Image 1 (tube, rainbow, N blue to C red):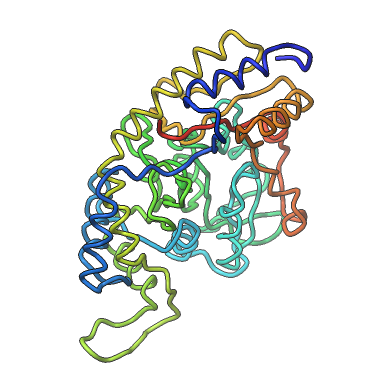
Image 2 (tube, one colour; image 1 turned 90 degrees about the horizontal axis):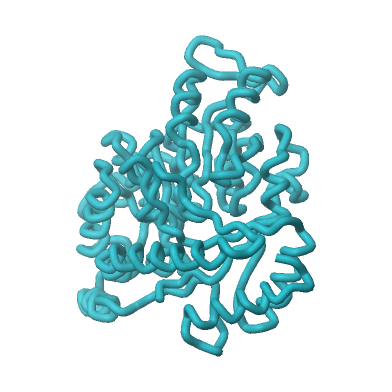
Length: 384
């Protein structure tokens, strides 16, 4: 796709035809064509609109069943879920958490909420997620084991956890990352915020690590308005997660007693009612979005721009479809013209390590992250 060609105009026309409108086309809008209003009215009529109610319990049970984990603990949002995950695996003040620079800021914010320090490792171009090759190289150069714990020889800090992110619903090489983390005694927490409905080798994203977190924000494949969930196969950690998310209140019919610092992170019943109706429609959402991705892939194969597809071993939810330009100049022209023509498109995130609050963090060489930052654009991806 060149600046002087008709390819940009053809792409704009194609997207408008796909979504059958000349009106503004958002990047990803929610779809409420199920039992949302019915369940919300039931919730309101029950008067249980806060963090206690039947919808919260049922929503957790069905999420656990859908994702194949033992327990699901719903939270106010995905960032809360990530924060709790780090606390639950034992991240403490001045510990280091390995992550990727190509991610939404919530990943790194959650690390700082835990009073930990992020380390930024490069991604793979074909997953846009944390690279196991770069992870191993970094650990070989900087890490040393002291008993059953991993320490950074350069900083002297403990490397307690690794938190890769599954970008746009596409799986990173999480199985390889898990193996490396086990070798170095590092806890694995998955940021699967964008991965609801995505699988790798038949296993749901967020279920590979010690814990995983998914977001149900308003722009995700299914939404509770705001919301998130912790996925766990550890009953003890699951119980601890629920306890911490409810202000660490000791269960009692009338007394208010608390045994440690807790958080007001529990999802309200009202949000869970909305989420339950969304979960019922998730198979339809996934089918619609995967069909949309196939159409995009077919269209873009005839242009000098790459459509980002999942690998054979994964099944992506294609939360946000992505295309990759030859360079930043082409990308910028497309962004300007598409948005000027009523089609919402956006570049991938600014690398977190370049932001002022994280610019002094330890960072590996980032050739792939920088390459993707200059070229990737998200295009409309709503359920049609």
